[in-house]
Amino acid sequence: MKAYGDVDSKFRFVILASKRAKQLLKGDKPKIKAKTKNLIRIAQEEVRQGLIDYEIIPTTNEEAQEPEEESFIGEEIGPDVTAPAEAEGKTEESPEKKKKKSDSKKSKKDSDE
Image (cartoon, rainbow, N blue to C red; front, side, top):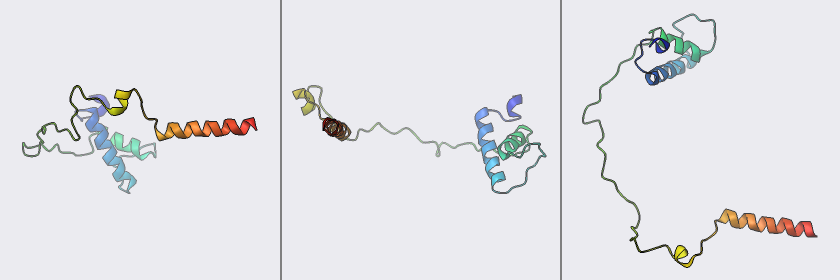
């Protein structure tokens, strides 16, 4: 992987470069001499050249979270029960729609006068 140096994935490359860039932004000295003064580019090049050490810590079974049972928060509605507004064929307007309607009526009224 020539584009990412010795790093095994582009995702790890991005994480390493971003952490190194933060260190540089906080005042650490660059490990290379570069034409650019852009600290992000310098951090990327340092990672590409293998100057940044990192360690992959394996996860243990205890740390890995097991998926919990799906839970439903709220009241379950049976298959034949519908919401009251739907049953009557009416739906409530949102407060934003009501405000827009009242504003448009006001502006229409002002333009008529």
